[in-house]
Image (cartoon, rainbow, N blue to C red; front, top):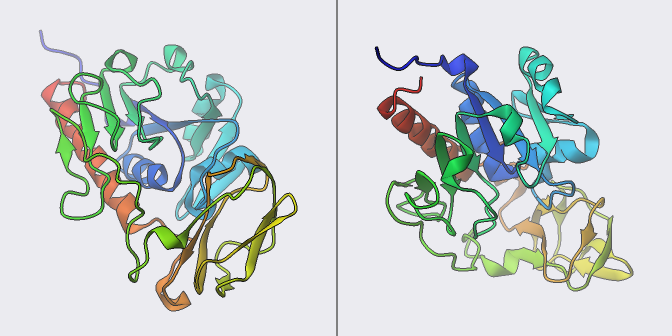
Length: 276
């Protein structure tokens, strides 16, 4: 007698991290019919908050395109959220809820450039995004996150390209478009995501220190004012393109590519193992 296959509609996928790239992954999985739950930290540091489900941690719920994430306080609340065609997001940075959830798939989409504790014992299928993981030692599959020819490539043996520390280039700008905190302290916003800004214009304050735009463009990302910003932390992103070319409110091409890669890995591994 063969294995009993679980319908996709009853297959739980736990995604560690709810930033903008993870949100692209979540959308693909939900559209494919999986039951997805997001596990997040109590103070998410995502800067592209308008397209990141993790923002629900701060405001209770977050709409991104056609989907909405809703903050829950326990695994027992997930069924109601799933039945409402929404996505539960649970504060659980250590993934302790996995014992109760028993997911078929675990996706590490934290993108910390290192492994923060994900391993193959956490679920029958484990997938990780970006450098810091080795397939098939730590996880079953690793997804390439570096922009370029290999973006979205799946590694079933080996690792993704090492982190270069240099942001992807937009209109000839890479490192200079990303703002890192000049000091530690409380954030006070002056501008909002989507605002057209000029070089030298104040975007926000960290305590009494003004943080200015490094170039002309559109403020594409800005850290929440509900977190305590640490010196050196990536806290904002200015896109040098014109406002007509920048969309701060829909999932990016990179996030969609990563989402497709994760879905491919889930289906490939799941079908190989007869899980659904």
